[in-house]
Length: 265
Image 1 (tube, rainbow, N blue to C red):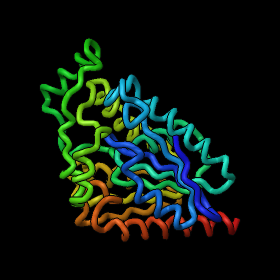
Image 2: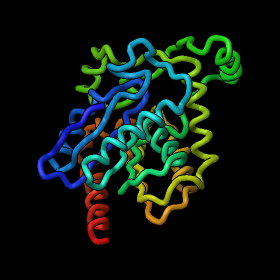
Image 3: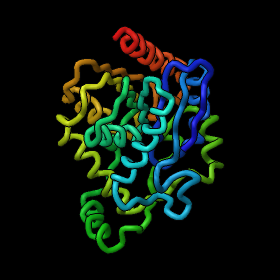
Image 4: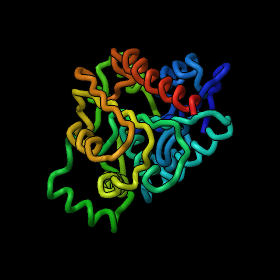
């Protein structure tokens, strides 16, 4: 994992990236948080980024993600400041599953287009076959079917991603089955999600995550303080979109309000 420190920090943000990508794609967001007084802690999830070249696009169990992110949060505690968790896409799903299974002391949680359902899923036949392959050939890799053009309208990001050797293009059958299981558990364990202030921001024109599933999960989770914000024209990666400064400012308002509440206690 990596730590980026701010001067006179007032809080810490733990960022959990999505599927196929890595921490290096969050340079702009990391710097924005630092300039606004937040330390940032982030790493690469198992099977992705610079730490997992031999297992690219594969995991044995979804719990690998949960264990990894728990370590990042433990690292964030060392600053002895309020800690926030920000999960994007699959990172949002990982954040949900972590909080359903482990007690973490967080000042707030931000989910960005969390992966609680997919726009495009395999055919019924392929889905049935995937159960068998998961047992016999769990490491068999298939094309993920996700393009950079589906993720964002930002052409500058397209150019960088298309030359990014760390970007995952194929995933294993086991990875897919574990993702599906993780989504199912996020819904069946709704009551286990802690009563922590929550901001869910969803792209309105998402080509990857099913926004109706996100809305359903948000409506069902019982929390004292929760906010849902949809960005109508945005594609999946709201922090890479042309509107990203607006998205960031909205996020900062949530964080600042939470800090004021924490300080008032």
